[in-house]
Length: 109
Image (cartoon, rainbow, N blue to C red; front, side, top):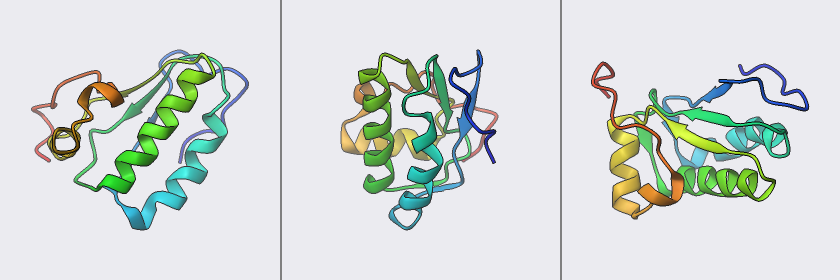
């Protein structure tokens, strides 16, 4: 569980995504992300644990990242798993979602 966000995101703070980023879990993830929408400061979304991902999950993340940028706060996806990178490539969204690092070879997902 992520700590409750303050008015400013602490340097290096990140949200770690669960193993599955699929339609069934989108409502719960939205509730988890919502408190961070208007919080000032850069925020990282760690996608290293993602093993299953579908278009609904990617769509939610894309909307969240765009909304944070509209508020003037940086937001990036870091340490994308191979499954996450494949989903972005399939959907043509690598540049839109701004995955900050290539697949972590120590993560065999």
